[in-house]
Each structure stands twice: as C-alpha cells, then as structure tokens.
Image (tube, rainbow over all chains, first blue to last red; front, side, top):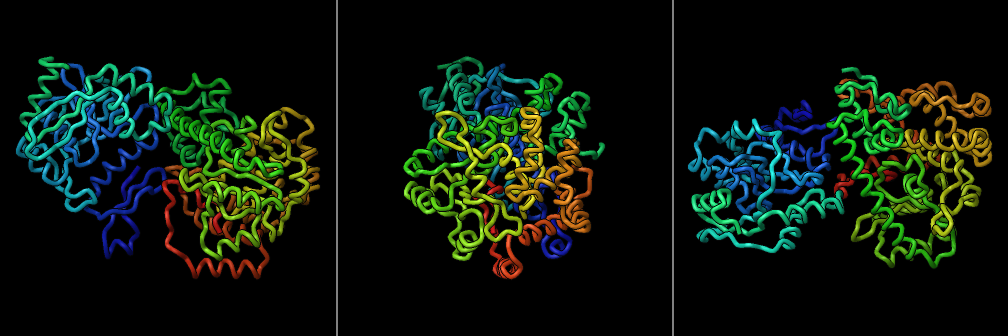
Length: 245
Length: 372
C-alpha cells in the first residue's frame, strides 16, 4: 500500500496524491494536501473490502470497566464527536469507524485509529480535551474540514485486547435537546446494526446470528444529546452500573 | 523478498505451501488477491489437506476471500432458478458456460471460483425468443448505443450483455463459441449438439468435458482483454487435471475433438502455457498431433512474451514495465482474430475517435469483459 504522486506533467500544474494498493488504484486522486485523510480512508477501505472474518459495522466503539459501547450511526449524527469526548475522558478507544465483531466469540476486536473529526467538532473537541491531541486541519475535503484526535497511548497499548460488548447505543446530536437515553427493542437494534454493516450480506446467516446474539446480551438504546458534559455523565453512569436498564 | 511468482506454484502443487515462510505467504496473498485466485487457493489448501499448514493470520485472508466466492455461488443458484422459470417455455437446451458451469457441475475448477457475470449458450435460432422472454422479466440490454448493438449482433458470438434492472446481475448470452467473423471458427453446432444435462432432473446443460476445455482455451486465447488471464489459465489447469485423472484417454480424445471442431490452435496455446507456467506435463504422444497447430515461429515468440506478462501475477518487487505493451499487443491481436481486416480498421478507428469517458458500473469493474 502506498501513496504516490500522479504523473510528472500533471504535477507541475496541480499536485495530486493517489492511493495505491497492490498495484491497483481504487480511488480518484485527491489534492496533495489531503494525503493524510486519504491514507486514513484507504486503510479503512482495505479492512472493509478484504476482511470478512468479522461482522463489520460502521460504528464507534469505546470501552470502560470491561464493557464496550457500540455506537453505530450515519455521518452527521455526532458519533465521532461523542466518541472523541469519551476517549478524551478516559474511555478506551477500540475504533471510531468500525466495530469488528468476531462471530465465534461475540467479542469486539479493537482497531484503534485516529478519530476523524469534522467541521465544528474540531473546535469543540479542542476546547473539551486539550488542543495538543488534535492534528492539523485539512480544509475542504469532500467531507468538509477534517482533523484527527490522537489515539491515547493506553488505547494503543491494548490494541490486541478484545472487549465484551455491553451496550448498543444509537447516538443523535440535536441542538438544544436534553440528554435522553431511551430504551429500544432488540429487534429494532438488530435491524439498525444490519443497516450499518459493511458485510452482513457477505456473511449471510453468520452475520444475522452474530448480531442477534450481541443485541441479546447488550443494553439497546437510542441516545439524544446536545451537551457533551451531560452526555458523558450519562455514559459514565452506564459504565459504573449506576443505572443499567 | 523473492520475486518468483508463488501463486502458480501453489496452485500446481498445493503441498508447496507447507514450506512457505511468512514473507512468502504475504507475497502469495497479494499475488492471488490481485489475480482473483485467493478463494481458489483456500479451496485447494482445504481439499488437499494442507489447511493445518496455513498460519492463522494468513487464514484470515483466505477465509475472507472464500466468503465472497461462497456468497457469489449462493447468488448464482438464485439467479439460475429465476432464469430457468423465465425460460421454461422455450424448448431448447440452455447451456451454462465457464465459471457457472464449473460451479454447477461441482468441478474442482469451481471451488472458490469468482465470477462477474453469468454466461449461457443457446442455439442461434432460439436467440430472439430467449431475449424477448428475458426483456419481459426485467432484463435489459446493457449497451444502448446503436453501434455497439450492431457490433455484437452482426459480428459477435453473443448478443450485448443483458443486465437485470434491480439486481444488476450481468448475463452474457452466447449463440456460438467463436465470433461469426472470427479467423478461428469453431463448429459451434457440433459442440452444442454434444452438450449434456448437468445431472438427472437438472434443467441446465453443460458442454461435454472435452468441449468445456476447448471453450475455456478458446475464450482465453482469442480474448483481447486479459486482466483475468492467470485465473483463466488456472481454470484450464484444474479442468485438465481433473478430467485426465477420471479418464486416461482424455487428452488424446481432446486432441481429436479439437481437430473435429476446428480449435487446435487454442488447445495448442493452452498446453504450451500450462506446461510453461503450471508445470503441466501432458502425454507426449497426444501432443505430437498438435505439432503443426501453432502459429509461425516469430508470432509465437511475440505471443510468448505477451502471454508471459499476462500470466505473471502482480508483485511488489517485479517490474511491470512491459505489461502495458503486452496488453496492447494482445488487444490488437484479439481484434485481429475476431474480424477481417476491413472491419478491424473500421472498428478500432471508430473506437479511437469516439472514445467516451469511462463510466464505472457500480463497483464491479469486471463488467468490461468482452466490451467492444
């Protein structure tokens, strides 16, 4: 896998970068200054197209006190912001992008990569955490402005340590909303997990059984929030067993 | 890291895998994945009893690739059920070709075989009714362009690929083995007449085993775009190995059949390159009959170089500098074989002048197979 420049002539006019894996170029080139985000996207792409040992779900995964929260959500729902805030306050980062669930053990395989923050989230997390854990900002990518939160050393050191899923929470940021964790049915959670999966069609029956099993042993909730401090208190309560519906 | 291609070696003799080091496994995975052979590798290592020798972290890649192939095989079975009910009223044999046939016939070549479309062969006189029955059930022609339509219908051995409007499955319907204008022309009628039902109670037919090999060779060696060349050569290796093991006379019968249907040349190439790249050593006597089936010595030299490049899998260390030239030579040659000179000039000239920006069909880049 490598990132390389496009042809020499082109380079004089407009410096571009291209992602190459085993001699093939699956994406269109991007402007030179977006090399790092492209590297990130490329790595994620390699996992989601090539590895089907796990059920892959587009989701953030964080863990505290031995139990992990799976947070699947479409872009724009505040998943990464919430994930970054949790990680900044001591939750272990398993992944900001993908939950890797092992069908045989039902455990989550960590895949700790820098948390990708978009647009306003960058400043929010800078204020919330500390500015020195946020990398440079890449302006005007196809996802807007992007910056990355550094993977905490503690999370990186435990990158090979699988985690037991404890909760499946579908977060939604809504300006001005009160923090609300509401219980949802297991069936609805399974359907939504499947909808966020990259490879459930490939794994067929195996994926279905795995998702059902995980949902059965997890608390399944929808979560609406606007204030990070409140949201974190709610998550900490879950992890500390203060309330566990 | 050494740059000796390992994929061919392990396919030809799966026990070689037992001696591989981790860096060699890594090279093998890269080569096989790019060549579309990773799932086949899984099949071979499993069925030949070498799964235990595969390191765990390598197995993850092999199993992942196999899942994709298995999923395709399930999808194939569903599509064939659908197609059969659409075509039930048409009274002619429906013959599966290539990968679909290997899978449906449960041949060794079908194990872990990936494919991008379904190929069927029907007698030419039934083409119109087959096509209209499909159109009524949601299959549409993938080429709307009038020139492309004419290119296929007047000159080719198949109609333009059809695609299901919802499932996007691609279906290639052939009515002959070789293009109507081809320099090397097979006796398609003879081959179609020998097609047999795949099993009792099974609605689908497959070519006779000899013809299956000949069709596979013809498809590979008359083709003009060979991005899956190594996979197709591996198909031929698996087919021949299995058929020869079942029938000691297979090879000599194969040679006679090639002579009868006019396909000695593709068989000549197949055996030449299988010997060269899969260490396949056929019976010398059988080969003597094909001695004069090859092209002129200078042509063979050029082809050896071009096919050598096609059958050399991607590797991180080996230079790929000759690949574009080899691809160009084979592209022009494929078209040269397919049509007489005046048509060729007209066709390639038009292609060069009317070049449209390439549209990507979903994620499936394989669908450019056979495009004019």
